[in-house]
Amino acid sequence: MDASPPSPEVSAAAINVVIPPELRWHDTRRGEEFELQTLTVRLLPDHSLAVKAYGRPVAGGRGAYVSFAMPDRPELRALVDAGAHRAAELWAASTGLD
Image 1 (tube, rainbow, N blue to C red):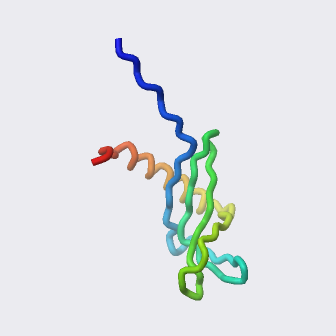
Image 2 (image 1 turned 90 degrees about the vertical axis):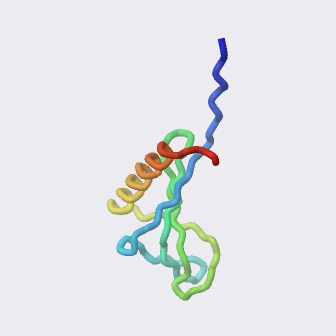
Image 3 (image 1 turned 180 degrees about the horizontal axis):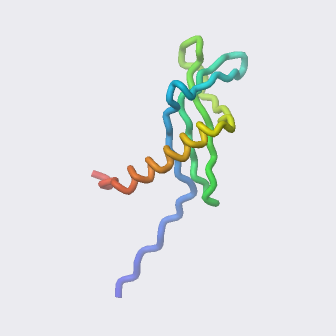
Protein backbone atom coordinates (compact mmCIF):
# COMPACT_ATOMS: atom_id res chain seq x y z
CA MET A 1 0.00 0.00 0.00
CA ASP A 2 1.44 3.34 -1.06
CA ALA A 3 1.47 6.04 1.56
CA SER A 4 0.46 9.49 0.43
CA PRO A 5 3.19 12.10 0.76
CA PRO A 6 2.59 14.56 3.58
CA SER A 7 0.86 17.80 2.65
CA PRO A 8 3.36 20.63 2.26
CA GLU A 9 3.20 23.38 4.83
CA VAL A 10 2.03 26.64 3.28
CA SER A 11 2.82 29.55 5.58
CA ALA A 12 1.00 32.18 3.53
CA ALA A 13 -0.48 32.86 0.12
CA ALA A 14 -0.75 36.24 -1.57
CA ILE A 15 -2.59 37.84 -4.46
CA ASN A 16 -2.42 41.28 -6.04
CA VAL A 17 -5.67 43.04 -6.86
CA VAL A 18 -5.84 46.10 -9.09
CA ILE A 19 -7.85 48.93 -7.55
CA PRO A 20 -10.29 50.30 -10.16
CA PRO A 21 -9.72 54.02 -10.81
CA GLU A 22 -13.00 55.01 -9.16
CA LEU A 23 -11.94 53.35 -5.88
CA ARG A 24 -8.37 54.68 -5.73
CA TRP A 25 -7.31 57.19 -3.09
CA HIS A 26 -4.30 59.35 -2.29
CA ASP A 27 -2.10 59.17 0.78
CA THR A 28 1.14 60.85 1.80
CA ARG A 29 4.35 59.27 3.05
CA ARG A 30 7.64 61.05 3.75
CA GLY A 31 6.27 64.24 2.21
CA GLU A 32 5.33 62.55 -1.08
CA GLU A 33 1.75 62.02 -2.27
CA PHE A 34 0.85 58.61 -3.70
CA GLU A 35 -2.13 57.34 -5.65
CA LEU A 36 -2.90 53.83 -4.36
CA GLN A 37 -3.44 51.45 -7.28
CA THR A 38 -3.02 47.87 -6.06
CA LEU A 39 -3.79 45.78 -3.01
CA THR A 40 -1.60 42.93 -1.84
CA VAL A 41 -3.82 40.47 0.01
CA ARG A 42 -2.16 37.78 2.13
CA LEU A 43 -3.91 34.70 3.49
CA LEU A 44 -2.33 34.07 6.87
CA PRO A 45 -1.90 30.67 8.60
CA ASP A 46 -4.89 31.40 10.85
CA HIS A 47 -7.04 31.92 7.70
CA SER A 48 -7.39 35.66 8.27
CA LEU A 49 -6.40 38.21 5.63
CA ALA A 50 -3.84 41.02 5.76
CA VAL A 51 -4.02 43.80 3.17
CA LYS A 52 -1.55 46.49 2.16
CA ALA A 53 -2.01 49.09 -0.57
CA TYR A 54 0.69 50.19 -2.98
CA GLY A 55 0.82 52.90 -5.61
CA ARG A 56 2.79 55.47 -7.53
CA PRO A 57 3.85 59.00 -6.63
CA VAL A 58 1.36 61.54 -7.97
CA ALA A 59 4.27 63.73 -9.09
CA GLY A 60 5.60 60.88 -11.28
CA GLY A 61 8.74 58.82 -11.13
CA ARG A 62 9.32 55.49 -9.51
CA GLY A 63 9.22 56.56 -5.90
CA ALA A 64 9.81 54.20 -3.01
CA TYR A 65 8.05 50.86 -2.61
CA VAL A 66 6.02 51.87 0.41
CA SER A 67 2.96 50.15 1.83
CA PHE A 68 -0.13 51.93 3.08
CA ALA A 69 -3.02 50.71 5.18
CA MET A 70 -6.23 50.05 3.29
CA PRO A 71 -9.04 52.30 4.53
CA ASP A 72 -11.93 50.40 6.07
CA ARG A 73 -14.45 51.14 3.30
CA PRO A 74 -17.19 48.68 2.28
CA GLU A 75 -16.35 48.95 -1.42
CA LEU A 76 -12.68 48.09 -0.75
CA ARG A 77 -13.67 45.15 1.47
CA ALA A 78 -15.90 43.94 -1.37
CA LEU A 79 -12.99 44.29 -3.81
CA VAL A 80 -10.75 42.17 -1.55
CA ASP A 81 -13.47 39.53 -1.26
CA ALA A 82 -14.10 39.46 -5.03
CA GLY A 83 -10.35 39.32 -5.68
CA ALA A 84 -9.93 36.36 -3.32
CA HIS A 85 -12.79 34.49 -4.97
CA ARG A 86 -11.39 35.19 -8.44
CA ALA A 87 -7.92 34.02 -7.37
CA ALA A 88 -9.45 30.78 -6.05
CA GLU A 89 -11.10 30.21 -9.44
CA LEU A 90 -7.80 30.83 -11.22
CA TRP A 91 -5.90 28.45 -8.91
CA ALA A 92 -8.56 25.76 -9.36
CA ALA A 93 -8.25 26.05 -13.15
CA SER A 94 -4.43 25.99 -13.08
CA THR A 95 -2.82 23.49 -15.44
CA GLY A 96 0.29 23.26 -13.26
CA LEU A 97 3.87 23.87 -14.27
CA ASP A 98 4.60 23.51 -17.97
